[in-house]
Image (cartoon, rainbow, N blue to C red):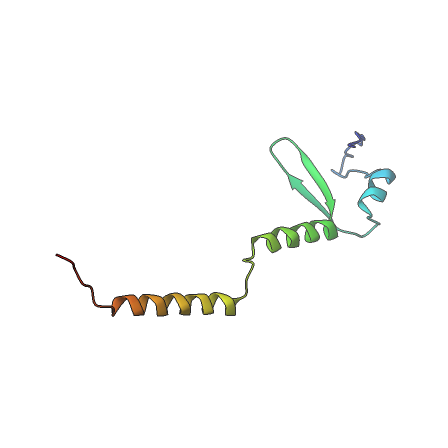
Amino acid sequence: MMAVIRSRIDQKGRIVIPPVVRRRLRVEPGDEIVFDVGCDEIVLSSHNDAVIALKQLVRGLRPPYSVAAFLGNRRRLAAQESRTEHTPRTHRI
């Protein structure tokens, strides 16, 4: 459930993050906050949560196999190609 909580920007451009938001983000004074700025919105998250989300995203992009498996597969394909190149071709008339 999304809550709408209001805050004001002071004359130095600072925003007070209300206690309920700080508790939800699990942030304390001195912690880093990440501002994800979109076209017409800003999403706040704690630095730790942003790092975790990024790691999960990158983990999803990684291939599901190791480099050794990739190289083994390429060697197998190369061997198959090599065998087909040396197979004599016959034609039936």
